[in-house]
Length: 588
Image 1 (cartoon, rainbow, N blue to C red):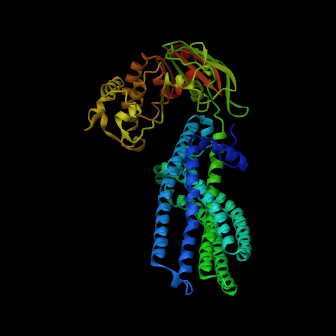
Image 2: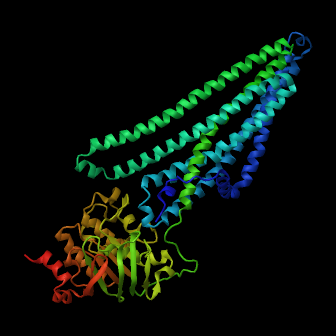
Image 3: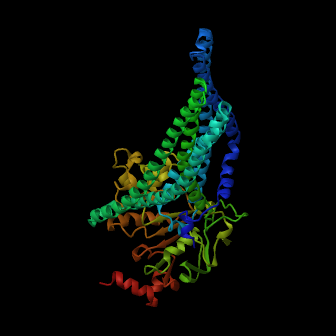
């Protein structure tokens, strides 16, 4: 079984481990980051040069120097300032474009990897993962990491280089005054460090509440019809309000932390600026030197304050990457062997050999189940709810793995067959048919453009679905809304049959596909089933015994064990388990 805490990102990953794993995605575009780093150095150098030019202008315009200052000299300084500013913006443009392309490439690969990883999860693992939580990981968390690569890390690097470069220029202007500024810088760094620790905890809590709300919304919006039927709107509003309050309060705490930190840094800046003018005037620094030092001071405090904001983004990305990597660390329960076989076509023989299976430890749903299904035959499974009928079908397509025993198709253990090859050859028709938004054709072909209109129409004809398709204005291009709600249960089931027929499987699974349809539609579906039996081996689970009377073999399950088997007539003659089921349904 899967560790639920691990799935939801509760496992803490060391910073070095996360950095090492992030480097895996950076390596293919590392050259882009190197070029961007060069541009950053140039930008920082230009940012330092600009205040020096203004300092020169201020010095030249002072009362003692203005007489000796020529217009040409001031014009050169002005042109130089404009040129450096323009060059700086050009480098910023190219730097931004390079980083955006690199960042989007990284996130594209990461998002694809996460989605493919989720696709490979077993049903057992999906049962522990609310869909809303998975959506948050694929969409929101990858977006947070995108910001990390495209802006946050770059700005952190830029700010650090700016602090070093600017402080070096301040030392050049006045060593004593620069040393005094170290006191303010130390206070800012300590405040930023404490702020980072506080904000990390606050953001972890906030992200947890966001994930919880997304999960709640996904589950309840998907079941809105049921909520309205049972008049549960007010109760759901109350539940949502509680979650909304938790998220609001968590966000308030984040806002309060920033509301305290930012004014505190601004206050330090004002004190430092006042000290600059006081010291400069008292120690007879030139006007140009005072102006230059003041301009550098603003360039020093801004990046320090920006670093604190970027800690915010780093914490978001750190939490997001931690949760993404936790998800990627969950190994799928069902995996292909290294030397798994690619099977193009099955004959259709199926064998279960002493199979035991439990969803939870030691609570076995199947107990020593053994049977053989010959090719091109139809076998039905009957029994009470929870007897293990659907579990048998799920094990055959490797949605789960048995704890003991083996399953064979054409005398090959299915563990030795590639999962994609296995499922491609097995068509499944379930009770709950899922239709996607789109058209009838797209739902039958599952957006596989290799199938033509004629292929789709032939499949629909084969399962007797053309009668209602032809009555639609747009035929196979008629609209299907989310989940196929604009079609009846029987119509959706016929589309499911057509979808299965189109993909030409050699083994067919029918799991309670006629349980929720009316008698008239059942007659149509029964005719379709008779045709589909010619396709290959068919396994049927049904509570309606009328659906399975003509099966070649009927296997009766009770408490996870096979209690009897045979044809319909043979089992009636035994007057045992199947006979009692028959009487319950048909004895008037």
